[in-house]
Image (cartoon, rainbow, N blue to C red; front, top):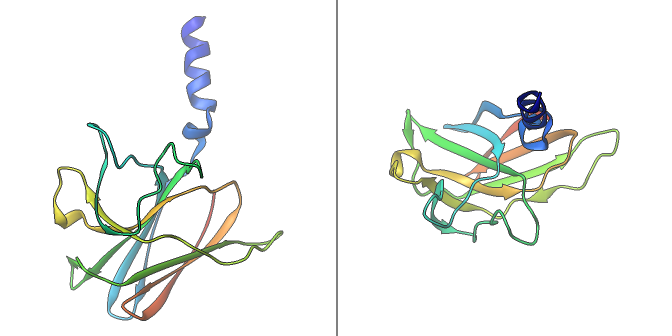
Length: 149
């Protein structure tokens, strides 16, 4: 009985309900894979991400209480682009269309995985709804994405 309660609690928790998004589109010659995942840690011994530069990461326990990790993996000819000028704008779509928001752009890679996992973005707070995202790379694009959470 107790085990059933624990399993049900995990399955019904907000983190368990979070939908992972992975979509790919082109911005000029660049392949852009947008991923929206649960928020990631940038500090401590078990940090998932290693910050390489750009904007300061939005930390899990920061004032904005981010719940998602919105990032773009940029490739050209199949190889990761390590030093791109990337912008990510996002907004909620109807029924209540929101204003465009710009994500503070941090460059990072997966801790212990090296520069081959370089990607751009940050942790962000998203609520349920449908979103439009535009990613620009070195002035090319935007690559456009739509998803629901």
